[in-house]
Amino acid sequence: MDISVSNAEPAKIKTGCLVLPVSNQRKLSGCTAAIDKASDGYLSNILKQGDLSTKLAASLTLHQVPNIAAKRVVLINTAGNKSTDPISATDFDKVAGSQARALADINSKDATSCLLETEVDSKDLCKKAQSLAQALVAHNYRFDMHKSSKAEPVELKKLSLHCDNKKNNKTVSTGIDRGVSIGNGMQTARDLGNMAANICTPTYLANHAKQLKKALPSLKVSVLNEAQMEKLKMGSLLSVSAGSEQEARLICMEYKGGKASAKPVVLVGKGITFDTGGISIKPSAGMDEMKFDMCGAASVFGVMRAVAELKLPINVVGVVAAAENMPGSKATKPGDIVTSMSGQTIEVLNTDAEGRLVLCDALTYISKYKPDVVIDIATLTGAVIIALGHHTTGLMSNDDKLAADLYEAGINSDDKCWRLPIWDEYQQQLSSNFADIPNIGGRAAGSITAGCFLSRFAKDYQWAHLDIAGVAWKQGAAKGATGRPVPMLMEYLINRAS
Image (cartoon, rainbow, N blue to C red; front, side):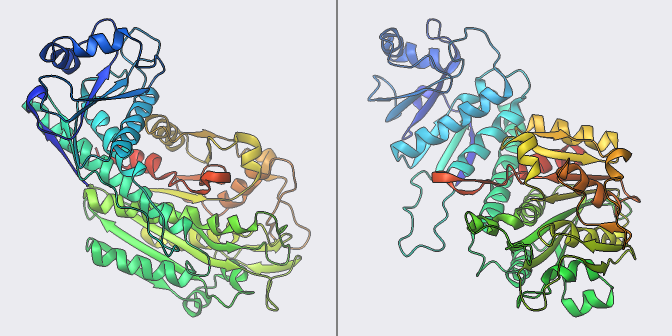
C-alpha cells in the first residue's frame, strides 16, 4: 500500500475516488465547498435531500459528479448531528475507519482523501495523517494462512492525503510513516496471535524473531534454549514447560537507535503458545482461544517491528518468555515448589497461573540490559475482564510517572488502560507456609495480586505491568487477535523518542 501526500487541486485530480469531509451539511467548507462550486452545487443538492446520514462517520458514495476529474466522490460526515468543530480524537478515529471501509467497498485502485482538513481538538496534522494511514492498514488486514482458498487481494493500491500547504508535507509524511508502521506492527501481532498453536510454538516464535532480523537488520536477536535457562537457574519458567514436548525459549530482540550510553526501554511479553491450564486443567469450552495466551509476546514482536521500521532514536529491548503449558507426566503439580532465577522460592498452588511463572524469571534476566524502564505485557488474568471488561487494559506500576505516561499514551492512541493499585494490603495476600511466595493470592483482587507477584521481581526497575486479557482478542463471529496494545506502546515510545 502506497500512502503519500498530494498538493494538487482536488477538482482536477484524476483518481478513482475523492474522499471529502462534511462537518456542516448546510454550510460546506474547504475542499468540499470547492468541489461543490466546481460541480455547480451538485453536492449541496444531494445533501439537501438528506442522502447523507447525520450519524458521525456515515458515508455516501457518489458517481459521475459533474466537472470533477475523480470517478467517484465519497462524502463522510465528520460531525455527526453536531454543528460545532472541532471533533474529538476518538471521533476522528471513527471517521478514519469509515474511510477505510468505504474505500474497500468501492474497489478503487487509487484514491485521494481530503480528511486532513477536519478540525480535531487533540490531534495535530501529523496525528491525523497517522490515524488515516493506520486505519487503512488495519482495515485491510486479512488472515488466511490456514485456508486453502486465499482472500481476494485488496484492490486499493494507492492513497494520497491532500495537504493544502506544501510546507506541511514533511509533517504529513511523518504521520503517514508512523501510521503505516504501527499498522504493520499490529498486523504482526495479529498474525502471531491468530496462528494455530500446533504451528505457533515457542520454537516458531524464536525462528520468527530471526526472520524479523533478516528483514530489519537493525535488530539483534538471541535465543536461550532450555539447557541454557537451566544453567541460569530459571526454575520458575522451566516449571511451566515441564509437561510439554515443546521446549521453552527465551527470545531477546535488541534495537539500538539511540545513544550507546542511553539505557533501554525493555518490553517483556508473556508467550504461552497454548495454555491448557496444566494439571489445573481448564474447562474444554472455549479452550481453543488459549492459543491467544501469547498475545503479550505477539505485541512485543509487533512493537519491535514498528520501532525498527520507523528507525526511532531510542534503545528498545523486546524479551519473550515462550512456553507451552501442558498436563504431561512431567508437568508441575499443585503444591510443587520451584526456585526462580532470583532465588525466591514459589509454591505453585495453581498451574493455570503460569504466566507469572515465566515472566518472573524473564524480569530477573533482563537486569543484564540495565533498563531505564521495564514494561511487561501479558494476558495474565481473567479477573481483569471482570474489573474492566473488554475495552480497557489493566495497568499496575511501581512508578507514578511511568503509569501516567502510559495512561496518556493509551488515551492519545485510543488504546486505553486504567491503573489498579498494588498496595501493601494486597501484597499480604501472597503468603505461603512452605515457600517464599505462592503463585496465587486467592479469588479476591486476582488481577492485582498477580501484579503484586510480578512486582516482587521488578523492585530494581521503574516497572509497569499491562494485563491485556480483556483486549488482546475478540470472541464470537469476529474472533481473532486485535493487535493491542501495540498502538499504546508505540505512542509511549514515540513520545520518549521525541
